[in-house]
Length: 334
Ligand SMILES: *[C@@H]1O[C@H](CO)[C@@H](O)[C@H](O)[C@H]1NC(C)=O
Ligand SMILES: *[C@@H]1O[C@H](CO)[C@@H](O)[C@H](O)[C@H]1NC(C)=O
Ligand SMILES: *[C@@H]1O[C@H](CO)[C@@H](O)[C@H](O)[C@H]1NC(C)=O
Ligand SMILES: *[C@@H]1O[C@H](CO)[C@@H](O)[C@H](O)[C@H]1NC(C)=O
Ligand SMILES: *[C@@H]1O[C@H](CO)[C@@H](O)[C@H](O)[C@H]1NC(C)=O
Image (tube, rainbow, N blue to C red; front, side, top):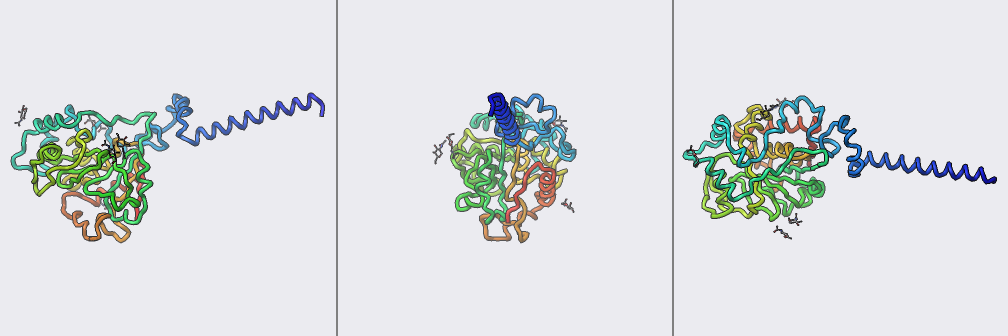
């Protein structure tokens, strides 16, 4: 082979390598969202065309949001109580007091103040940002989790949110081991793992007083029924639902069905407001149409559905619509 010819081949070879490498790099970059640098570098031009407002593949808030969703979702209503947003409108306060009408309620603003002297008053959850991809598992208590083996999948999210008496010990393979947030009300409270954040849904002023009591003296032992006087929990990891948010969920999402939303539905809506990507487990009936809890053998355990307080069917319909519109991912279990 003559010298010039060899040179040509070498040049072509080099060119080929460069093109291949560049092509590979680009296709890899665009396929793998974890290559954050490239995503960020392209973000400026990207933000005009991309639909999501976060760093996930599919974000809770999209620029081209579904009209059904956009009509109901209101980002400016903060799910959690702060000293500042605890000042309620008369209308909200009246509605909230009616939920579990107390005979002689204590002074609400004094109870709130006393609570915030004990627990942090912080806005913990900021709105989505182009840099954030916060994934959440919302774990309901349905018997459809029995044998579903979702444990690893559930545990792989950033936030793992459980509710009421949900145990994990003994059910790890199906429901996972981690709990970052546990949503309760006084009548459904249990002890927390040391790292878990308690999220209280207050349905009456006494519930705020119970939270204080349960973390300190344990003097409140009875609401409309006996409650646990004390719970094991870290007082620096306590959050309280805002009554304004409860009313918003009831009106905007449930269109006033039932008396007020269930813990399950309120937990789902919390996730929709603080997460970018939501996976839902353990909602709905099992394959035989039973509504018992995954830790119970009693298939009649779902009798709570017919108390008339919550409209479980309507709530489930809305949940399915959220899944249809790709706002949540439903894992239906067995
Ligand atoms: C969202 O909530 C805020 C605060 O209550 C209210 O001012 C605003 O009108 C609501 N937006 C929509 C679209 O309903
Ligand atoms: C509740 O307490 C606050 C502060 O102590 C007081 O300003 C307010 O009037 C009280 N409200 C009622 C209804 O008694
Ligand atoms: C929580 O418990 C784990 C193991 O049980 C321990 O390693 C960790 O230090 C504890 N964390 C706190 C904040 O107490
Ligand atoms: C518990 O919290 C500590 C300190 O915040 C952290 O280092 C540890 O990894 C956490 N453990 C679990 C099991 O989440
Ligand atoms: C739920 O949706 C189904 C089908 O769309 C409808 O037939 C049913 O009436 C709905 N149930 C409630 C309680 O809204």
